[in-house]
Image (cartoon, one colour):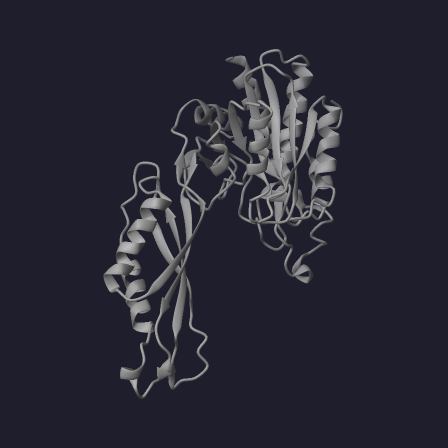
Length: 385
């Protein structure tokens, strides 16, 4: 497949689409054209959950046989931020000093280009891959609310009897060097807003008022002193971070009628959002008084135990880089939290040191090496089925 077996030009074409969530800006059209040239059947699936903006997504499959090996990722990116701080236009995809610059180069348009190039190389040697299918599951809603993206795609797969058997997500998993780390799970994330109610009054007459602030402080104190667990073989300890305290009181001689705080819990697989919600109510009930707790969960903790998929990726990484990657569950959340309900899933991509930053970039040599790794994964996977 001339041209498509090299990832650079497709990566540049994708970066030139300013696909800041929820805008697609033509990114999926660019990707679909490349995949159709390789023979993929493409489906565009619109996520229309009214809780967020409508989002265009893409599912592409090459072949009808099983098993179906899936590459998953996202074409949406975070905003460029202060454009004047960038060395070049963040969406110009400049190549300089052996590096590709641009928003999304690392997270994760470079990996998507590597998906395509690796598949093209695999097809050059195996034009009729009778042993199975290759698919891409690409969303435009990973950096945003993630309501109309991968979840909408997975719903569509179920409605259309499409089954994926293994999935590799191309998130930038490597901290410093390509081959450092494979993600085999993620911690859960619980966001909460605590509102404590009282009665407004004059600060000089506390008996005539009910100041909610001492109770809020006591409740938060219970959180900061708590140790949820000590971690386990695959997860670091769960942690609680208070992110804001809000009173909005402009008068120093008035006690407020209510006080609010927000916090986040990153939790391992020793907990669930339900068990943590119950624990939080226990802590706050122990302090007493009227309060309201609003909880929003962006993902439960999950683990793909070391096995076929992690070994497949690890062996390919070691063959290309000489490094044995760490199997990790660190970091934030990713769309793997949705895919894990459908098949075994792991994550491996580029180096994440510059993702979301000014002058985001990747080394061209690392883009080529990632393509080699993805190609090697396809070779190993389909040679064993």
